[in-house]
Length: 240
Image 1 (tube, rainbow, N blue to C red):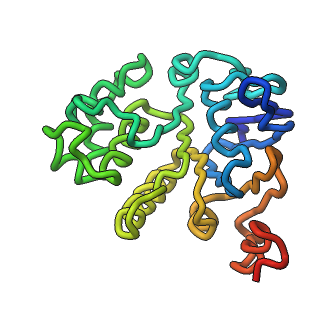
Image 2: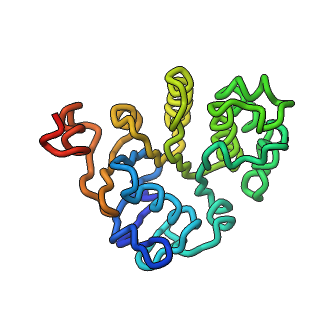
């Protein structure tokens, strides 16, 4: 299978504080992978570095064979690697429909944008119902739907989601997880960070446990651990 993303020896951090300590991960075309692990151990830093929001101090990030480490975020999005930001980063005074239309800004996204808009509406009917509303009037779950919808409007070749259901009610979490599963079922490659590891196991081909800025374990869905083993991986053998 063709390797779409290959991250090797990646180191990055903030100012003088190192966070990533030589991470290696990869993703093949058509694959979905999940990242899990304790908060504050580097998952978001890893995603931001892949997306160009942070510049690595060492290592390579090859996307479809091209090294994009240190490239501008706009160039990375134009190449098809798109991260859906948390819903609270939207422009609050823009309408739902115009936000989605504006998201198809790069050249590779212009062709077929109307068909993708229909797909987003089918995936998230609430956005179609609220197309005239301003983004700031949406609920937290609806803003997250809009954020993912914007990422889909970019015509991604790889979609990154960082804890898309964080802070949502159980009902909205269920809706978003169903939508994410539908995106994966259409063959869109995914990298998803989620605290619900059982959801990640159902969604992903492989999982990476990230601890202390390193990959502590790689798990294949076919031999995924049970719930107790997952808790032990998170909290240690004495967690029960």
